[in-house]
Image 1 (cartoon, rainbow over the protein chains, first blue to last red):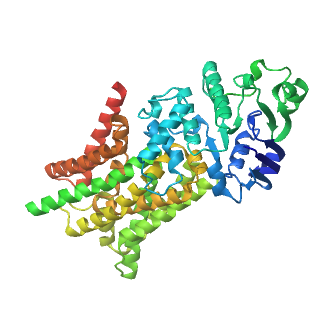
Image 2: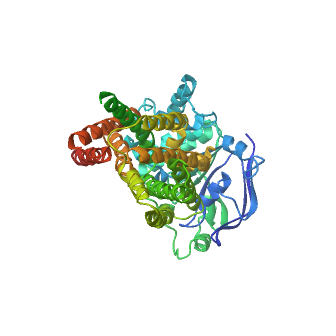
Image 3: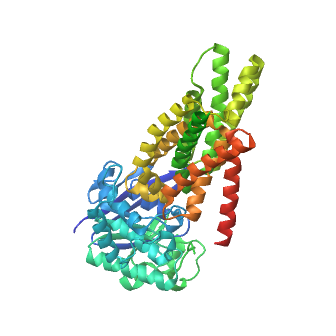
Length: 255
Length: 268
């Protein structure tokens, strides 16, 4: 499916400080893109701005032609979002089925009853993320990788055209990170869903040759990893970096 | 006498239903501190209501005034949080307003009439062990309003508690749902404070939710209701045995239950 994500002169301020400063870029479908940058670089702010959750000081964002700040309802339909696992409240007793159904039920009105059709859709999504027979399990009882898969299934249930993932590799062992990256790559190919993810580490994705955006309040580079992860470019985005980090692990993972 | 006793137990059961409906959401959304703030607001509102009625010689229902005060102070907390203030600071601000109201209007009421002070005490400790038809009517009416709304929006409240960012991204209007819950909790707490008292409501608010989350996670909703009603009925029974106000009995049972949960949690 042809489309694009266009961010133009985006500036976001929090209490007078610039979180994003005149950010502009364009991604044409199909894209599998990783946004990298140091802590406080504005990566999550960028994702939330694309979702229309943060109002910018200036600039525009268009997702497949829809203005995210004016056509919020349409954006909610076509964009799936996977938040950082660290922001999930594990005290709430939720089964896998309930969580995945959240994505589908958001299109209905209260009391949002989980009907047979939704249950079938949930099962289908769980199959897609390779978690068959998990629907009745408690979310808190799952491993980090399984939790991430459940959240991806929740985002996918509404058939989004664009999937935004906020640090999907955080708090995971390296082999699990690779499994999640592999799953995302398969979904990218199988469902033709565009993927934009924020990460501190590129190595789990490197086999899938993603596009990389180097961000630190401003865009420092966009391109294939091999082209832009060069010391001269990295030094601009990551003050203090003196050599190419092993595995392209830059900044702090929430591990 | 038997009829009055039965009436008291019906009031206790309905109060349990009300407590259960808000306790679960308060516990899961980690808003217990907010719930306790709400009770400060209720107390401040009760004292303000008594003062207004005394000085102007009116008969405005005190729970109505306390509900309005609680909703206003809750919205102040919600707005401060929405505008980026930390939750604890926002709560502290709201508590300081409520406490100031309690102190100032409590003192002013005591200067006007000794009856005002005894009425204020009734809101703190709860009314007598014998419930009245008026208590039953108030609790039943509040339950009829609060319970359907809580269950209509239960899934939304749960989703928001589980993942606020994800809920926003799905299009849920967090602010509207939050204020709806605050209002329902304020109405419930105001009515409960006029029957079992602010202190007992304070004590019991968290216990059923914590109990069901710790012990019966899988069936948390029915268990919250069962435990809440159980604590209320047992509290009334113990209060009758010890000849103390129901709030004292409810408080005792709540504390013992909570200690049991802590002990169970440690061993499980």
